[in-house]
Length: 238
Image 1 (cartoon, rainbow, N blue to C red):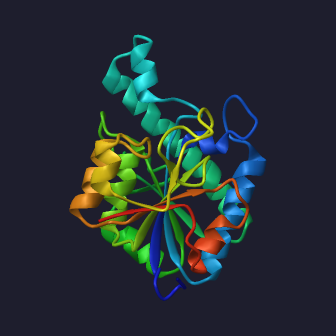
Image 2 (image 1 turned 135 degrees about the horizontal axis):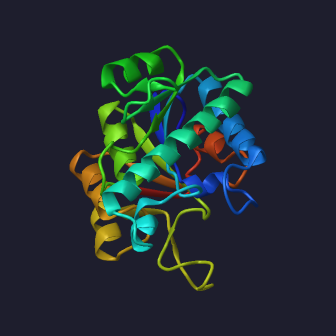
């Protein structure tokens, strides 16, 4: 596929993707490498939105397990995604990509409120847009937020960046006999409990016919190969 096929994409990054070799926070080397990957996409004339998690700083469910009220923990997690979004914005702008951060909860001193029409306008002007704070609601993961934002902005494809090169029948790190799927349906992901995204996110994409591509962003040039038409990773579709 070329840029004629992908006019607009949504990239989902986990907060852990920014850790690199660190135990906590953001590794500047990793954020810079991700920025270069995104820059190549923008240079190809493709509009890109990004949703990022906050697991490298706080994870709401994990905080709840330690005794903090779940709703409070989720709000802390949302604020962590804002921190990650600002860090990634800095890396992207140093790579020459004009970037806007839009948050589902209001923190106007540091970024814009999320408004769908404004987000689409930013994309049309060639700016990368980072969507922070998930959906703005507790009990919803950033995977679900990514599915929602991809649908709202009319993306042609949602890309989930992971540490492996697609979806496997079991954990390939623990099981060397795990089989990688080139293509898999939404229902298969749910029925086989394949660890890709949470069920809400998969169901939302299924109901709105939003294709998902699972790739390994740790491989340099993976995004470029994808937009150049290579069958990278695993495609989740109808």
